[in-house]
Amino acid sequence: MLPRKTAAPMMIAAVLVALAASFACKSTTADASASVAADGQQRVAIRADDKGFTPRSVTLKKGQPAVLVFTRTTDETCAKEVVFTEINLKKALPLNQPVEVDIPTADARTLSFTCGMGMFKSSVVIQ
Image 1 (cartoon, rainbow, N blue to C red):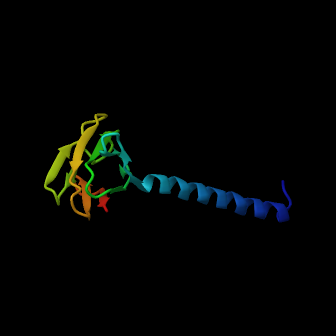
Image 2: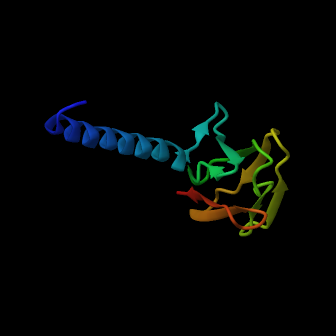
Protein backbone atom coordinates (compact mmCIF):
# COMPACT_ATOMS: atom_id res chain seq x y z
CA MET A 1 0.00 0.00 0.00
CA LEU A 2 1.27 3.46 -0.94
CA PRO A 3 1.57 6.30 1.56
CA ARG A 4 -1.25 8.85 1.36
CA LYS A 5 1.04 11.55 -0.04
CA THR A 6 1.85 9.28 -3.04
CA ALA A 7 -1.54 7.61 -3.56
CA ALA A 8 -3.64 10.78 -4.03
CA PRO A 9 -1.52 12.33 -6.82
CA MET A 10 -1.36 8.95 -8.58
CA MET A 11 -5.15 8.63 -8.47
CA ILE A 12 -5.60 12.16 -9.81
CA ALA A 13 -3.11 11.45 -12.61
CA ALA A 14 -4.94 8.23 -13.51
CA VAL A 15 -8.29 10.04 -13.68
CA LEU A 16 -6.81 12.81 -15.87
CA VAL A 17 -5.27 10.26 -18.25
CA ALA A 18 -8.61 8.43 -18.52
CA LEU A 19 -10.47 11.68 -19.23
CA ALA A 20 -7.93 12.75 -21.85
CA ALA A 21 -8.20 9.38 -23.59
CA SER A 22 -11.99 9.62 -23.53
CA PHE A 23 -12.00 13.08 -25.13
CA ALA A 24 -9.41 12.03 -27.71
CA CYS A 25 -11.54 9.07 -28.79
CA LYS A 26 -14.70 11.16 -29.04
CA SER A 27 -13.07 13.89 -31.09
CA THR A 28 -11.81 11.43 -33.69
CA THR A 29 -15.27 9.96 -34.28
CA ALA A 30 -17.49 12.99 -33.76
CA ASP A 31 -16.92 14.64 -37.12
CA ALA A 32 -14.95 14.10 -40.29
CA SER A 33 -13.89 15.69 -43.52
CA ALA A 34 -14.14 13.87 -46.82
CA SER A 35 -11.26 12.14 -48.53
CA VAL A 36 -10.94 13.22 -52.15
CA ALA A 37 -10.48 10.58 -54.87
CA ALA A 38 -8.29 11.11 -57.94
CA ASP A 39 -11.39 12.11 -59.95
CA GLY A 40 -12.16 14.90 -57.44
CA GLN A 41 -15.09 13.10 -55.82
CA GLN A 42 -15.40 13.52 -52.06
CA ARG A 43 -16.13 10.28 -50.19
CA VAL A 44 -16.92 9.67 -46.54
CA ALA A 45 -17.55 6.29 -44.90
CA ILE A 46 -20.27 6.36 -42.24
CA ARG A 47 -21.00 3.47 -39.86
CA ALA A 48 -24.52 2.85 -38.59
CA ASP A 49 -24.57 0.87 -35.34
CA ASP A 50 -26.18 0.75 -31.89
CA LYS A 51 -24.79 4.24 -31.13
CA GLY A 52 -26.19 5.81 -34.31
CA PHE A 53 -24.10 7.23 -37.14
CA THR A 54 -20.32 7.64 -36.90
CA PRO A 55 -19.03 10.18 -37.65
CA ARG A 56 -21.90 12.35 -36.43
CA SER A 57 -20.95 15.31 -38.62
CA VAL A 58 -19.31 15.42 -42.05
CA THR A 59 -17.80 18.45 -43.77
CA LEU A 60 -17.83 18.64 -47.58
CA LYS A 61 -16.49 21.24 -50.00
CA LYS A 62 -19.08 23.19 -51.92
CA GLY A 63 -19.19 22.47 -55.66
CA GLN A 64 -17.29 19.16 -55.57
CA PRO A 65 -19.17 15.88 -56.21
CA ALA A 66 -19.71 13.98 -52.96
CA VAL A 67 -20.79 10.52 -51.86
CA LEU A 68 -21.49 9.24 -48.35
CA VAL A 69 -21.02 5.48 -47.99
CA PHE A 70 -23.20 4.09 -45.20
CA THR A 71 -22.57 0.63 -43.73
CA ARG A 72 -24.84 -0.80 -41.03
CA THR A 73 -22.81 -3.12 -38.80
CA THR A 74 -25.44 -4.48 -36.40
CA ASP A 75 -29.08 -5.48 -36.13
CA GLU A 76 -29.15 -3.89 -32.65
CA THR A 77 -30.06 -0.45 -34.01
CA CYS A 78 -32.97 1.50 -35.41
CA ALA A 79 -30.59 2.91 -38.06
CA LYS A 80 -31.75 0.41 -40.67
CA GLU A 81 -32.34 3.25 -43.10
CA VAL A 82 -31.04 6.77 -43.61
CA VAL A 83 -33.35 9.71 -44.23
CA PHE A 84 -32.43 13.13 -45.67
CA THR A 85 -35.67 15.14 -45.42
CA GLU A 86 -34.30 18.32 -47.05
CA ILE A 87 -33.50 16.49 -50.28
CA ASN A 88 -36.41 14.03 -50.07
CA LEU A 89 -34.19 10.94 -49.92
CA LYS A 90 -34.58 7.70 -47.98
CA LYS A 91 -32.39 4.62 -48.42
CA ALA A 92 -32.45 1.22 -46.73
CA LEU A 93 -29.23 0.14 -45.03
CA PRO A 94 -28.90 -3.65 -45.39
CA LEU A 95 -26.63 -5.29 -42.82
CA ASN A 96 -22.90 -5.18 -43.74
CA GLN A 97 -23.54 -3.80 -47.24
CA PRO A 98 -22.17 -0.39 -48.25
CA VAL A 99 -24.86 1.97 -49.54
CA GLU A 100 -23.78 5.03 -51.51
CA VAL A 101 -25.70 8.29 -51.21
CA ASP A 102 -24.92 11.16 -53.62
CA ILE A 103 -24.96 14.49 -51.82
CA PRO A 104 -25.76 17.70 -53.73
CA THR A 105 -23.01 20.24 -52.99
CA ALA A 106 -23.97 23.18 -55.22
CA ASP A 107 -24.99 25.34 -52.24
CA ALA A 108 -23.34 25.99 -48.88
CA ARG A 109 -25.72 24.62 -46.24
CA THR A 110 -26.19 22.01 -43.54
CA LEU A 111 -28.16 18.88 -44.38
CA SER A 112 -29.49 16.73 -41.55
CA PHE A 113 -29.87 12.99 -41.78
CA THR A 114 -31.53 10.60 -39.37
CA CYS A 115 -32.46 6.99 -38.93
CA GLY A 116 -35.96 6.01 -40.04
CA MET A 117 -37.38 6.67 -36.57
CA GLY A 118 -35.62 10.03 -36.20
CA MET A 119 -33.81 8.92 -33.03
CA PHE A 120 -30.24 9.18 -34.39
CA LYS A 121 -29.44 12.59 -35.89
CA SER A 122 -26.36 13.63 -37.84
CA SER A 123 -25.38 16.30 -40.34
CA VAL A 124 -23.48 17.15 -43.50
CA VAL A 125 -21.96 20.62 -43.57
CA ILE A 126 -21.27 21.93 -47.08
CA GLN A 127 -18.94 24.92 -47.12
